[in-house]
Image (tube, rainbow, N blue to C red):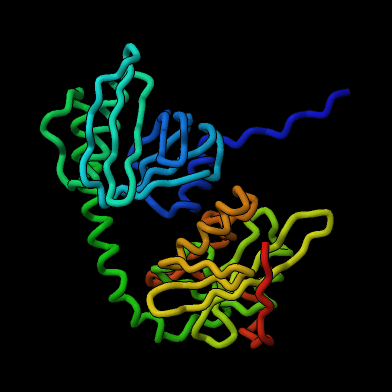
Length: 303
């Protein structure tokens, strides 16, 4: 008897996983053919526009993106006359690269053009050939993006919250931090990964010196292994202590580095919101069985 194939993720589950992974609102999605500088040919992706970032997935049902493109600094969008019938082609001109996009039909191309220009220019473009309902959607997205940016700009002012004492029996997670950040010790992070493998296998936590950070991961090989990586805060950047150190501009990029380098085998550890998350004064509280304990120094290891 042939073995049954594993069940495919339900659409709602896929949406929730992508939302947790990106931590950004979904504005538009669809098939796109992408050609970046390092590619000789177009590559086909299921693409999502979340905030001002394009996330690329191998297919519509993948929960982990394989690449992404930040378009907030878009210089211009240039349309091209496609050599293929009923296709739309245009180029996104960014400060450091030019990315060519192709859609399966002209209507889809006009929609992508409208949504991209709306979120990057913070205004609905006047010369888009869309139906009234689609234009209304652009205005809705515009208001959401304006609100998101306003809230994001205000986040640094919330740093005073860090001085507050955490609620007894809970682990306090504060914004603006990656969703897999937990204020736990090395031992507690290890226990969280071992007891809840289905929730993810990567945790960002404070370092033992309280100034830097550490990444704890659980690798699923023949024998599950726990590894720890130091993430040093140097100026405005963060350096992962590997055999060849990697320096990145923020902690979100640190998490993204581990996800991309392992092709999605490492996933941020996130408690499901329905079951055991509670929101209190902007903090996420999760059950905690023991008090914070200090651990010895960390061993920086390589993937």
